[in-house]
Length: 120
Length: 112
Image (cartoon, rainbow over all chains, first blue to last red; front, side, top):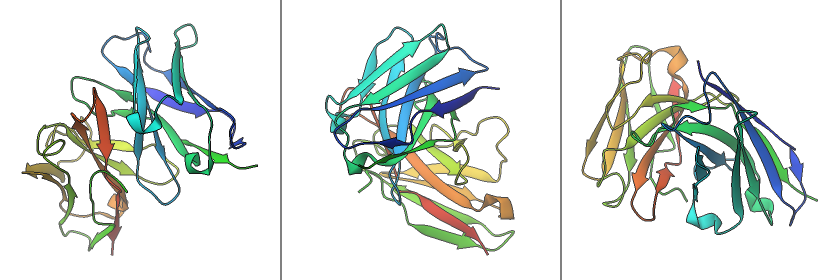
């Protein structure tokens, strides 16, 4: 059974960089059949796809986030990470990591999410 | 404002059926059969219920079914049970950029 778990600071100051890690168990981030993705949910709002990283290191992200997103992969730890720079209060959200099989364009396994609050 | 439009709430009594809609455009829901539905009990990991419009992953009860007509996809839950009470989100692939997935705003399903 594939499991994903997000981790990282729950509080980030405005203008700083949000950093989160997703640890995968029961599967490998080196598996070429999947993208590894980030999704967020601001309080009281719907879900927003942030982006994905592939085992090769290639990435793709939501154009609405412009160039603030950086995603990396650590195959030795079976983890992938998200960095979101120049955060504002609008980036306050529950952040989820998820597995994305590109053949079906869905998210078949998710982490339970972690709340990140942007506040001074 | 979410890219896909869902009703904020839906409800039904145990044993009844309820349908939740997800309206997009000709660039997402209407163009591709890559519509998914997720069940989310707050504080837990969202669960995939339907993918590719009407396919159920292993382990999802056949009480859950999906369909699509034009730019609107639908999730139907038949034989409602108390544990079906949750938030439901739809998603769709969109061709607006290289690769992008858009979501609906979510529907709170209440079992009366």
